[in-house]
Image (cartoon, rainbow, N blue to C red; front, top):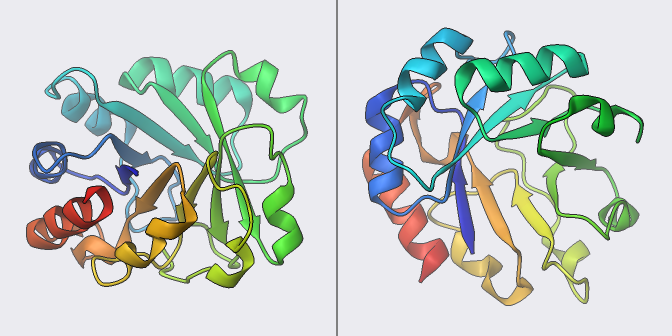
Length: 195
């Protein structure tokens, strides 16, 4: 499984994740999040990263123009759209993007099943809530284009193996406190996800 460590706010956490084998890092450009990072600070971190690491910019309630501009300014390589948009929204981005499905019921898993998408547990706030989705919903479902998020941590990531998810996305489950990662939890999570 591919692994994204989300909510990166400092270079130390970014390098710990990369050295442990993370495929992607997530930067939260949503000002109400405790893991928010200003674009100029994200740019400073991204400029110091090694090649071949996906840099994912997470957005909530922003225009295509703002998303495009922030991604170019920071050096991010993928925009994660963490809010409900129309299908017309994505062509307007003019940037590689990942749709997020905030699932409230099993049927939600089948939305956009022809494309790679991130599926997160629905909650009123956006991201990093630690709320886990009902894994029973995924039984018998083709998960090869699904990146799973929500309530994941080093203690439960191994149970996902049989489902065949394309990847996993973790934030609060590997933190020492909001906005700061715990190096041991990050490393353990990645090792177990990739074992």
